[in-house]
Length: 100
Image (tube, rainbow, N blue to C red; front, side, top):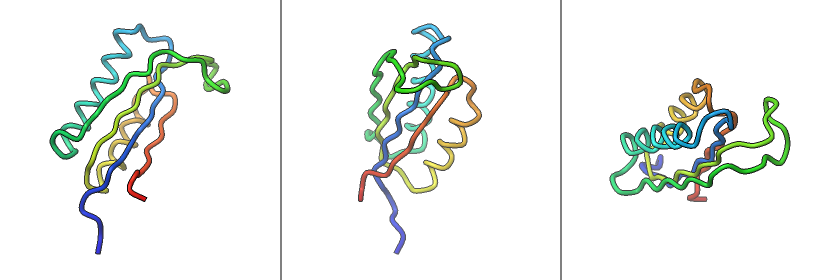
């Protein structure tokens, strides 16, 4: 039987060329998207701020890190990954299922 709900976490890095306000707006955009598709009151967003990258990505050595935890149906992470890929300010993202 397929799982109906699962706990997920996503970490993404925003390009350092954005201002802090713009980076916060991008984080808010993805938090709102998670709230739209995830279970009510399960979305937790955490802004880790600007940090040095372990290695250079797209000629960037720094980026704004953010973490969002949520509980949703298994089809939402695929949609979230698609939106990450088409958002120019996202330089890297990772979505993991925490249940197992």
